[in-house]
Structures are given as structure tokens and as C-alpha cells.
Image (cartoon, rainbow, N blue to C red; front, side, top):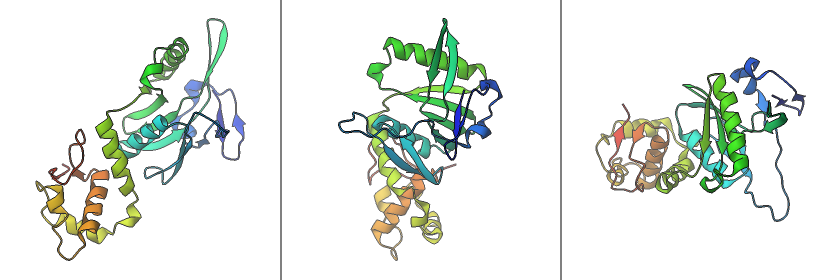
Length: 232
């Protein structure tokens, strides 16, 4: 396998079993953006609260996986296009660049992103098959990510607008915690601090949900009637 270091230097032909997750976290994306007129992919950068930095994506579906990773409190690191994986199979050389490396509380997870309708294509089955075997052989997890439930995605996409912690004072967050909002509807909780604008309190509540300090069901549309619970 190969990785690219900061400054663009490629470190080639390392043994996959000997490369640690810590080493991979020092790498930069193997492939640079492809920009051209009429391109079908939607590329960009996303500011990750987990990384405190921008992470690249090459499609809207990859951006979706980024949102879910950034929202997941178990994820400690998110790296895009983290390495070039190589293998020799059936007498031919095979290469593949996974979409993401996540380092979680449970260990590293190598992620490939692909729409449902393309998962059955023979070349996809072949590539993801040997990639899974190589990744899982060293005890890491391998994940193929496709379209998530639409309602959950819309909720997380909305909450991501409140992920930037410097926009919310600790004083305000502490006031909400002391306001007795557990078991209270979100709309009512937003009016629980008479000395604060309702819009400001509501935004801070959304930030606390993003942080998983307040919990609401995300399998139905987020609304003022949903009941808030403090995380246990």
C-alpha cells in the first residue's frame, strides 16, 4: 500500500500489516480534486467539527457519509482517500483507494461509498470483495455505505448547521442545562429562558442535540413538538 504525506511526497509499497492507524492519520488524501466542465461528480470540502478542519468529498453521497461520521461521537478521526491499497489477485495487479478512514472508539473503519444501484456491478463486487478481505484480515472493520434513511439524513444535515461550538457561549449552554428542559417539548424549551431571545435558545438546543448532550428521535422529522431528554 502507499500513502501521500504532507507536501505531496508519496510513501510507496509499505506492508499493509505493518502500517498503523496512527501513521495513516498523518497522511493527506491520495488523490486530488478532479475539476472539469460537465463533470458528473459533486466535489467539495466540508468543515468537520471532529477534525477541526476541512475534509474533502467527491460526491453528494460521500458528503452524506461525512455528515454521519461527524455526528457520531465515537468517531475520533476522519480521513478522505487515506491510502492506495494494492493486491495481486488471479494473476493481476489490483489497486483501490477507499473513500474514508474513520478511527473510532472501537477501532479503525475503512469506508467505501457507493449508491445502492451500483453495488451489484461485477467490478464493484470484485473490488469491494478483495478490499474487505484485506481490511478484515488485520482486524479492522470494512464498511460499504449507501443511501441512508431520508428523514435521518435531513435531520443530521439540519443539525450540522449548529456544529460550530465557538458560536455558542458556555454560559448559555449551562443556563439551558439548569432550566429543567428534560421531558419538555423542544418548542417549549426554547422559551424556557425569558431573558434570552427564543431563537438564540433554540439554536443552542440544536447545538446540544448535535453534541448528543440532548437526545431526540431522529427517525422522524425534527419539530417543536419533539420531547427532549438529557443523555445518560
